[in-house]
Image 1 (tube, rainbow, N blue to C red):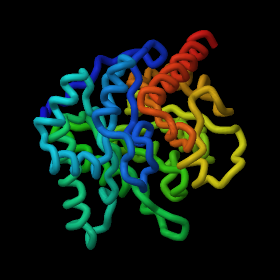
Image 2: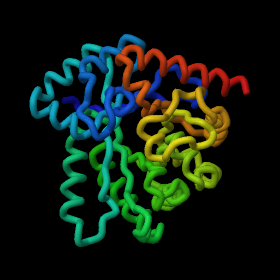
Image 3: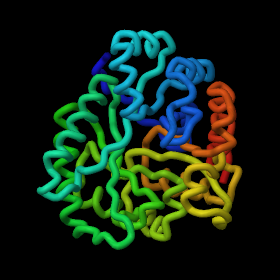
Image 4: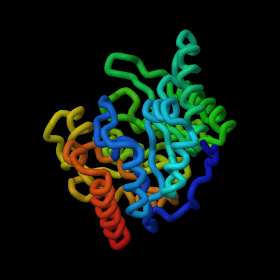
Length: 298
């Protein structure tokens, strides 16, 4: 497959029409289930509605490359004018010395897949459950900077994500990590659901510089949590504008910081998983474009 990592030209946050679709938004399945909707059907749905990029999970991509080959996948992508823009997700970059060999193998595998897919970036996160002590932020920043440097050698960007159901590595910590690392190819991924469900989200948003934001993923939810955090994370997110999150305020704040990234949508929802890829894309585009219109006129 192509190793072209070219990104679309920077566009003002509130002045864009194309939307990036993350891997889990469009598969028709949960993260812990086999992918329901085929790679071809998803790519065709994006092209049908004028969208040009999607994310991929490393397990699905590795399987497709093994069973069908790079040339066939590239033909599908090129035939629809769609690219794989992102691969997810890398854990272990923060591992201690005794786990370095395993962590290095995980990283090598994901970076090699990203290169084969022509992806321009990959997601990274880390896991510190309740009861496990978080290392000093200076240590995490040093390790993240080193990861970014290794990724830069392959022409890749690194999007650092905080996951609200893993409370140790908060958005406030992640914002400090990318700021201290200060790498041109590494930044904070703002996932609206995780940001708004993280008590440190407002602090992180206030202190992060626009140049340190590498991506924005949109979704919504009720203003107050009505089910378990885990259940809402996987099954209960809503399309942008259908819930109580201040997404207009989020976009306007990021725009005022000079953030210039392509907007993405990631709605993990039992209801959305029932839709065909084409209907999923159509409804998602309508929601994102309505939100942008509201943000521009606010």
